[in-house]
Amino acid sequence: MIVFVAAAALLSLAALALLLPPLLRGPRVPGLTAQGSNLAVLRDQLRELDADLARGILGPDQHAAARAELERRVLEEAEGAPARTGQPRPGGRLLALALALALPAAAAALYAWLGNPAALDPVKRMGMTVEEADNRRKMIELANKLALRMQEKPDDSRGWVMLGRAWQSVGRFPDSVRAYERAVSLAPEDDEVLLEYAEAAALAQDGRLEGKPLLAVSQVLKRQPSNQKALAIAGSAALQNNDWKQAIALLERLRRLVPGDTDFSKAVEAGIAEARAELSKPAPGNSVAAGASMAGRVELSAALAGRAAPDDTVFIFARAAEGPRMPLAIARKRVRDLPAAFTLDDSMAMAPGMNLSAFPKVVVGARISKSGNAASQSGDLEGSSAPMAPGASGVVVVIDRVLP
Image (cartoon, rainbow, N blue to C red):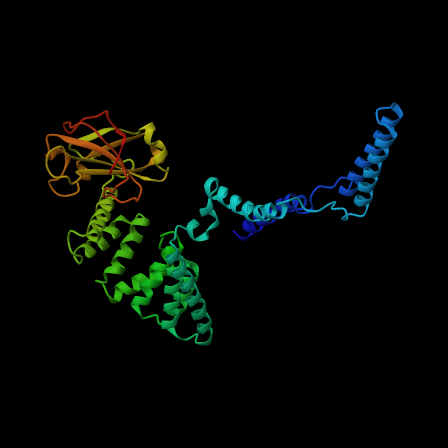
């Protein structure tokens, strides 16, 4: 921003340097002055009088009187005021001052109208309010001061925790992880510090949790098997690593600890459903278990193709046309796989008695989840088939609508 403003100011000064001097200096005509111009006119009139006398137009007395008058005027002009060549034009200084003030103002107004003033403001570029940016600046200043103090007190574990939190609050995740690592080395038995370290490490790794941070969570669970934060972190890591059995075990323990009908409990349920769906898939080469099945193809409409990324998750599911909304079977693919064939059968049942063959009519649906969660969310893309009897094949599901 500083470079842009400086360049704009220099250009404005250059424009003023071209426009103002002529206004301040006034017109110049080489060799011509106001006094010299008047004398030349009088001399011409003297020559005309002499010519009139020679042609007989004027008599000697008339010629003498007129010549005497002209000679008097010539003498008066010769003794008059000095020349004014190069003096400013009337009002020139005022016009120059007006231009000096108006040109920069006009340039700023035009940029505000036609340009992008927000691009000059780093606060707006980052999507922050002025208050948020000021708070962030203050937090960075405090974190820097605390970092200097920790050089004097390197054995203060709580100080390192505070520094880790400060860096994490302003998005400096690698610095946050380094601070937490020092805290963990000083307080390896502090479970809260271990979990904060694991969270900071996940943020620094785009949400993934592996290596030492995951080992720290495991240590917490050994001492506190019912620690909800530890169970949630470990369950998420198991889902990321496709360890479906471990994910179900951890999240089932967590579900028994959290209150029902909350966003957190719904997220836990979705994680369990996803893990069960993956675990129920038949292994390659194995025959499908006996019972009802649905087979077909899932496609993404061309109108929505630009709203899905290749790695977005696609959930293919069957549910009862009338009855509980719980999926009877689920398969999982990626957008890059579409159009994709699918098969849903009784071996993928989510709960005893909740299978395809238990209902007379079922609907096959497909949903692209931007978050990767099995539970539907606003903005997900979805499509569904008409109700049909279990055992149908050649089912075509087109993902053609956006969930509100």
